[in-house]
Length: 213
Ligand code: TYD
Image (cartoon, rainbow, N blue to C red; front, side, top):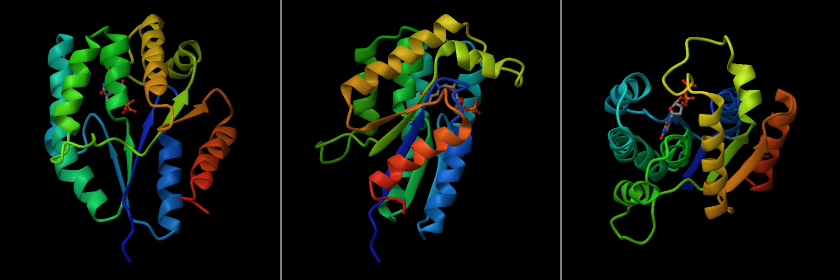
């Protein structure tokens, strides 16, 4: 049976708590008989995972950082995401390009038109018609103060997790701006609720789209 591939991304500032819900969605889709590709960015391929380690651990200027992230994204799209969608699979991607606009654009204040150019290069299609974008982006929206409370003492922070709360205020604004530019693609979830309430909201989005029973 031919099923159409489904590309879904998950976003939010560090500490917003998306991981358990992504895993639960993968399970829910598998229960319906769909094949799920669970993946993440930066990363998702052997090459992109090497780039991830550099991006998360090494100091670099924001253009270098953006180039490495988009290079990994290209490799990930070509080798994992596009083939999985062509096979009709559900691709659940923990972060995608909105994170670059939020973290590098918002958090680090890097030039948005340059990011838009990189997005065009990396996500452009042969037909030139449209960019490859998720069909749905689930945005776990949480205040930077609450996220910091949740992250405190959790584990050894990486380069981004170690940033001050003002950084995450700019990242959160970056996500809000991205949502404004593509409101139909985004589903905003109030991540300040209990885990059960967040899951109920997430599930509701997928049921309303007719993707889960
Ligand atoms: P994250 O997805 O939170 O993984 P983990 O749960 O293992 O920490 O970590 C990825 C980090 O990379 C996160 O701090 C956001 C950052 N990031 C960017 O700065 N730009 C990007 O384009 C992406 C995809 C992630």
